[in-house]
Length: 161
Image (cartoon, rainbow, N blue to C red):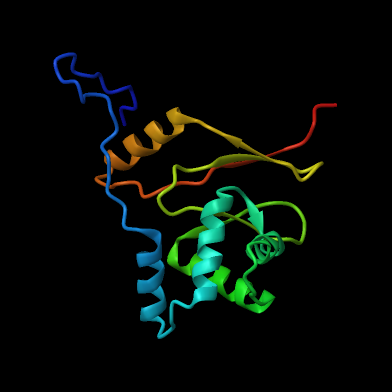
């Protein structure tokens, strides 16, 4: 498999630029998923989704609950947890692997992948940007006649001693 960089065409101004893809609005994706499950897109679920999009970072369910309530909207803990499960199933969010008991999540749909370094000694999560990994991923998939829909890289590390 040849994984060398693809040369750009100097006469084509769009050469070398990633192809833009129109992404369906997140609320439409969530509504369709809920409808398929025989569930409704309630104001509570809409507020949870809106809050996740505003956070746009790694979050825990309890933090999400606090953020929703901070907007003055009343929502139960059970609703937040059920909505997280529905969003996981829909591919809107993904679970972030970490040490400890508390599950952590990040917005996945329509976002560039957030590659992470997870510090096992402190619990800190550090976002890293590796554009060369995206290129490698896309070329590896293309070599097999596939199109990558996303990826997740998580490096677990501790401080040097």
